[in-house]
Amino acid sequence: MTVYRADVRVRVEVQDDGSDQVPVVRPFDDARDCGYGLGLVDLMAHRWGHHGGRRSRVVWFMLEWEANREASGSGSPTRVLLQYVTSPD
Image (tube, rainbow, N blue to C red; front, side, top):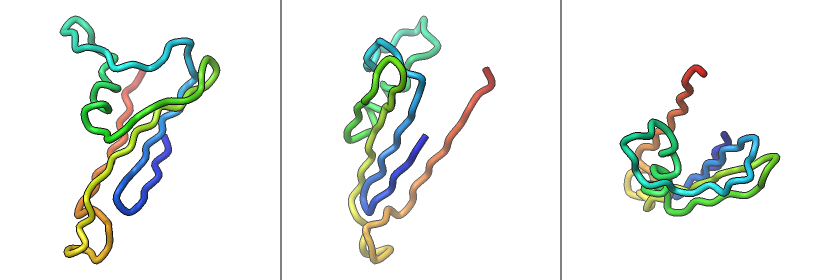
């Protein structure tokens, strides 16, 4: 995962081994226990996309916020939380 931060936005990129399938937002299904990641990204992100293909792919998304100049004197958000969680295979 790579995170790029600017004054009022952040871009997050996640690289994987690639696939012949194009990443898509899947509809919610109670029977499935995985595959909801892009649905969450689609709800939260201002934009998202992907590039690459069968051998390597990057899925990216951008989060944006309004500048809070009164609190910090810059375009920095009041609070940003980024948490990266992995689970054992």
